[in-house]
Image (cartoon, rainbow, N blue to C red; front, side, top):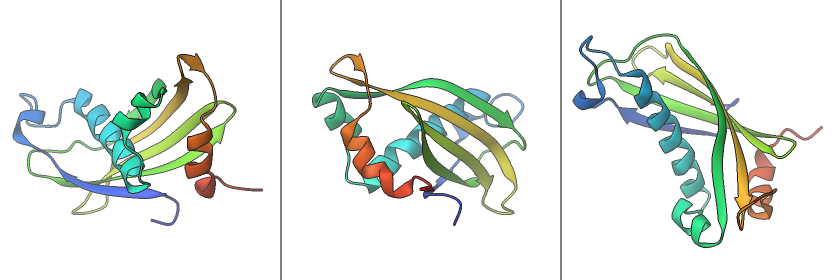
Length: 136
């Protein structure tokens, strides 16, 4: 996991699959979002509490490349790395099928923060994410 900051193992549920028997493409966004939320929780931060404090991280852009489909019952590992680009917090997120480590999805998720309704850097995110940023 060295190139990633966090990983989460999950399992495909039957209702996430389409008539072809594979995970519907929209569900991958749920997996990616759940991984980001769990990453925050692992750092002691509650997404709901952020909102109560006037900090709302929002997705600005997602780029996803689908490589290998998942099927019902498949276990998978969702991994992420966070970096900072200007005002954006960029999450490089990759999903791998657990049984063979085959790449399922490669994604880049650009997020920004609204602090009290205004686009801004989040001092809290700067503090908690800073150890993960590549410092040159």
